[in-house]
Length: 263
Length: 260
Figure 1 (cartoon, each protein chain N blue to C red):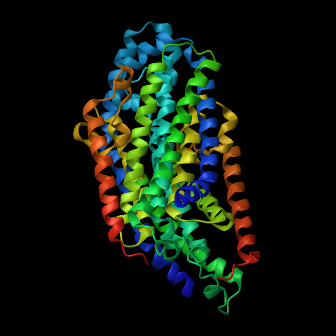
Figure 2 (figure 1 turned 90 degrees about the horizontal axis):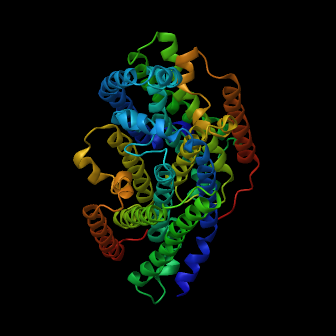
Figure 3 (figure 1 turned 180 degrees about the vertical axis):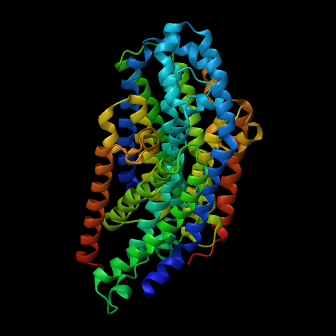
């Protein structure tokens, strides 16, 4: 319990900064929608006619931005980027902070098993990660209602909230796993971030291709695509895949963390 | 000299990896995807002919600029610039905050070399590495030429200028941040922060926001369209570089280093 509380205290400040960023992003983004809505029908017809690479250039592959739900999908993509980076930093910190700060001798000589330490740390990180995604959901709902943008996208916002959480979780445990796997903890932080940048570039390429196919399996940020969510569902196959990945990464994290040689 | 050598050596691998990655993405976008893009533009133009003439009059012109070579190049640079930005700020953070991070400032600062000297050696190492990346990038940028060489060279140098801005930001952050656990993590956050800001700038269509989106200070699309960068943003970029580097230098020279 002490470890958990300490972690909560340690991670509070970055959480506040991330939340401020989130507030600005969601409110600034949604505030503009009123402008885009005018002339919606023509834009609508145009966008539908565009081939995929051109749609991708607008950052709106398969989305109709003239509708609130489509416009929201653009904003939520940036939220997804934020939660992924935040998740990576939380996950890497949970598994690697003591080594980087050179305090592992202090913590791991206490009469608590490594698994328990890791569990407490991961749990604390999870609290913040979920806090962030719940906040993004609440802010989105609040922005939509306070700008009087209309109604009827509650379902989409909820699904997107879920998608954002799952993607964030995947990166969270992935980073924790990398940090516990590699010998030099700093490298784990590095690889986690590089892999994220890589998947992000792939996201852009996937959007430009007419048929990205199996590429999608490599890109958590495209596990749940906008058209599917706007149809009212999270892709079940990819939901299952991410559940499996999250469990697998967690198990590997615990296993390798217990074996790790702290230096 | 030893510092220069040491820093070059320690950053060599990551610089090579970034150079290859940026080069590959640039090449893939220009050689691999640009033809697809041109095909789809041709298709779209046909669709436009089927729209009523007033419609084409309103949207046609805008479409032409967005779907031109410069529009495509500018779009790609959004991503290439992001990669360059992350690389450059990671470089600044890791080189200038290394001793603070690994708690060996006293080891370096007790050498018979002034702090200014250390700073300058480190700076030269970074500039050499950035130059190396940009030579490769420039060769690719010029050979991808759809337009004349002067414009392509200017568009290619967007990478250098953008990297200098982010290098300065990274160095600044490295000097002032209280604790840096991971240079890569901080650099990723800086890079994507800038990416989201510039995306919002485009989405919200607010002119003033360009002053706070460093990825757009040196926009290659401007270079290709008008043969020069937009003056006010380029000046902002230069100011950011000077101020951040100046502040970082001051910090490096004056900072009270913690004993272990």
